[in-house]
Image (cartoon, rainbow, N blue to C red; front, top):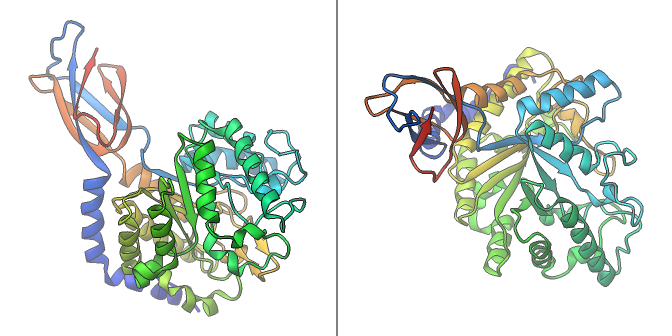
Length: 447
């Protein structure tokens, strides 16, 4: 297929529904992503500052958008490592930190928490990631506490009682070190895929036990009583749009929540791994459901019925070929999907998966190579592709508030802006304030 043929196939339904989508996203973004704020400026005696010029500029977003940080200091080239560190905090405000048990504790009793731990590719030590995030103004999120797929070789996978004791120890150790330092904690991951994994002896007996998910959530709340706990599941958005209440994920959520699982946020993945197991043009028919905006809208409506915040926990958008036209199509798809998700009332965050081309996971047991999707937002040397530039444009320009206003006879200015932190410059003085959902509409600022 030519790049133009890929474009027609991938964008056809977005283009056909463009008027309806534009009206929906414009209305929802204005309603759910922005708020009104009045600033009342006075001098120290309480007298209003009349006719003062006020420059209001948004500094960051309450809405979270990020990626996994699996390549932190993982490149062989130090210049690329430096560029990764420099770019990550420019393009994202949230980072997925890996806590896969197999690589976090390859040797029993010797977890790789510390930043100087022995290196394992795509699994940087948590302390290294959290330190970088804290220094760079990024929020870290933990991925994930229970994922039966990646287990250390030393765990007794056929001994249920021993496995539960070891999970209790794992949760306790992680809580002691990271409670209060993470934006959120993913508790369970991809439980609905366990039946299809081809990972040899890595899966444990507890994956098939009754109420394993509930027990994990109870254990998580025990050790993380004050944290935001997230459920992360696989690519079910298009299926939710088709099947609704009989989709496995919907039924699992309905069952767990009705039994009291303390799920704070519902996460769902959206990997478009077109090309990972074969030529992209041959695999495209299977992935066409991921290019249908009606299925996304409907699927997100079903998830929203639970009344919980939503998150796209992992997303992958392929580049169909090489060159500027292929990169432009990836950027256009990113804009279409992120705009639809950003306009979803219950959505709180969107996480991209692999940032750089050529750095994704290779699974020989599945005959799968995610690198064949060319889905990075950056080239392998961490220079931005058009998709990365489009992501930055959306949050730094299109979904960004910056205004110049003049105070009235009461010393007030009123504006409507995207939720986040702000700076107001008045007569050479910079004042900091926040515009957040649920805040009071007026703030008094004294110069």
